[in-house]
Length: 515
Image (cartoon, rainbow, N blue to C red; front, side, top):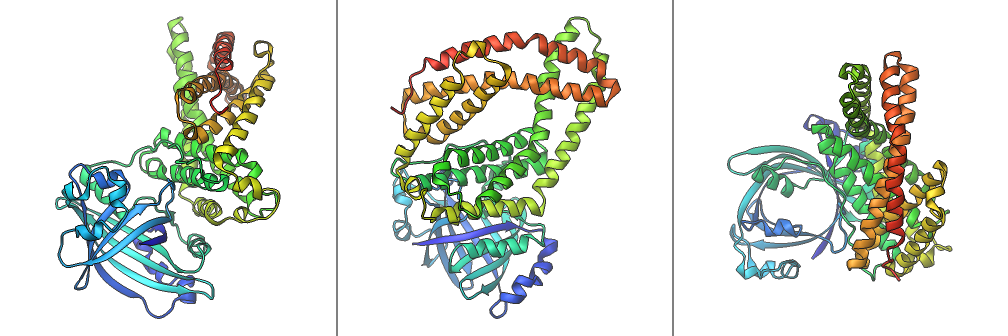
């Protein structure tokens, strides 16, 4: 068994020659490029049991050799794009060798014995690989350009990828080389493996919106390991929604990418006791996450207002015999602003700055200085995450109760502070909830989510009034409809506040799950 440390970047085929002439290759390559035509056949069951556990089995033709390859995600490392388990064996024909498969981790991962599985060819890849060995005094990396396609027998889909695989040295070399390439070429971190391309082509799946997944934590992990898993999950969530944003301009993809960075920023706050102020990278990491979230935020806020704030008010007001035409100018102005915000979001996600920021985030998660600094954060970092989580959850819960004391009589500003603390507790529960399985956890999380939603509705109303005031001042034609919509929202404030008060009562009666 080997551990494959690899970073994949999506590449426009028109840029292949630029990559070949890139200064990084010219400066560090050892010898000439090695080119091969490679064909691989991927195997699975009819219900794709291997895909379901994140495993692939393929037989690759390399000259006269046939090499059986098995790849699997590493345990408890959901979201990691750079680190996989790999097994290779020479085989004598085009059928998977059961003996070799039994020497991998497949038998432990599958619920059905390998002997009972009927593995059959599903799809194939055929591509030209040009490889360069890049070396410094401290590291050796193989850079490969793969250009070809995936085939199902009926259809073919082209792909072009640039892969960096660590052969010697520390993982930092992968990120250093990738940054040098991405700073001068329009590259994007690749999240879709060749096998996944094949499955999508085979099943007709269209890349869609990906929702956040709960991080796969185990009680015996250290706090540092848990933060790595959470960080990988957040970064994976962000990158997995790029296709839906670029190709479909999906409003939900913007929301999910924003959620990914909000979760990551929250994780940095939750794990503050384990993060050293002496970390030279931490400030930049926080800024990267803030920049990405803020860039996506404008488009998302306008989406929410158009689909909820404006539409709900418009329906109610037209039902009260306000002519629908009154709202035309306001809706058109909001839609124009939303279109411009989407263009900015799409442009940002396709920019070198975005790729470089994501590479920095990935490197910090995997190999950042925070992992080894010997100061007062060393003890919290090495603490069992179950114990760390108990301390954090209790502290967050106390802050919520303190901020929300006498909730019914709180000012607008004070309720806003309650919402912030509730959001922090919600993210903490999302991160650590799997460490405390049971009905109490589910009930607490449900009550907390309801409270956050209702406090969010109060905040949405305040944001809407601010936006409408701005539009009234900037666009004279919007003044009348903005005033009508703003008045409708203001009139509902007491109703929304009463719902939030009831939600607070229900939450405050819930028994915590971590004691």
